[in-house]
Length: 106
Length: 167
Image 1 (tube, rainbow over the protein chains, first blue to last red):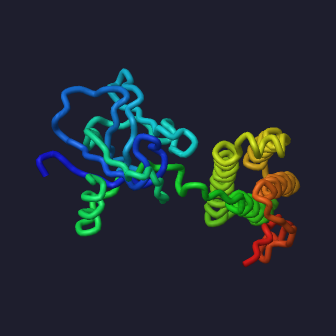
Image 2: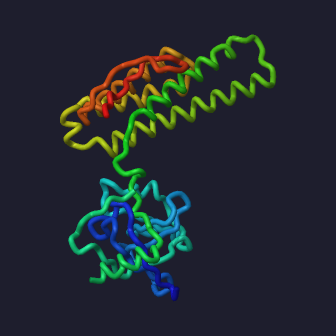
Image 3: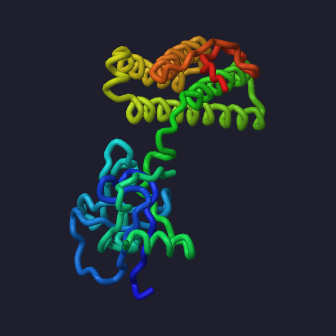
């Protein structure tokens, strides 16, 4: 709706910024340029809809993403290069549980 | 307050979830998949060997040989992946300090698996099973789970290390 979506985060690979059980507000049309370090929602052919941090942009304009929790996240190599069209939103803000209780992911 | 509001809305009208995506599924590791892959390779060798001894093969037998060989290759690659994931993702400093031989053992498994993929040698495949069983024994020991060795109740009926899991 209006290019804005609220999604619930599952899994622990984006801790500490996005613990499992938190909510993220993503916009799909209001960003002008890619920013390394920003967090995006991706429609991945293998992993479904995932949320990851943009790590770098290669010379073919393909995007490479990584998790924030390196001990649990699937690796950048496993995610592989992502086409800009497969990115469906940029994280604007997130809301975590007040007591920081980390809910179990999948 | 905002969290409570969103959480309440989520219960009424569930939001779409996005996965942080761990190496699925989180913290679930079991060497049985690697052991099953070696057993499959041994079984495939048992099926391939009679075909290699025939003087000539019909078209049907050639197709069968091709299929068995390609499956052996696939299971070898999957075995290596299974072991690499447990070694790379599950084993961390505490486990490696307790079992410092793990690195050398995993490297031996990689080399032996390649050898079994390249050739049709049952002895090499049984040796690979022994290495993977050692890896499984170490894995369960890191979890303080006892193990026992038993003959798997299906072909190729080889010795496999299993965890002793009690209710």
